Length: 84
Image 1: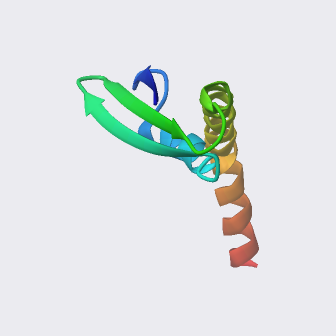
Image 2: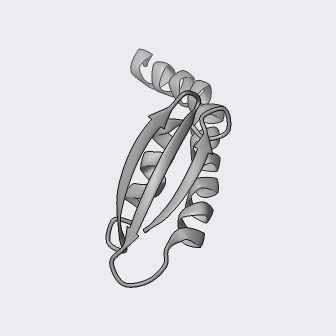
């Protein structure tokens, strides 16, 4: 079992869960919270997935940022389309 400790000031819980979710076919994940940290325990099904999980954290963080950045535009477009 591998363990990684993540600061919630860097990675939000929803980003951590999304990263773990994308790798459920390769590993089992257990999450625990201690103060401002999330402890992720990873048990690989066949191969080590720690590096892949860390890459997925970055990917999911970027996806969340992109969604947040475009949320206002999407809401404006939806409002305009519904008002016509």
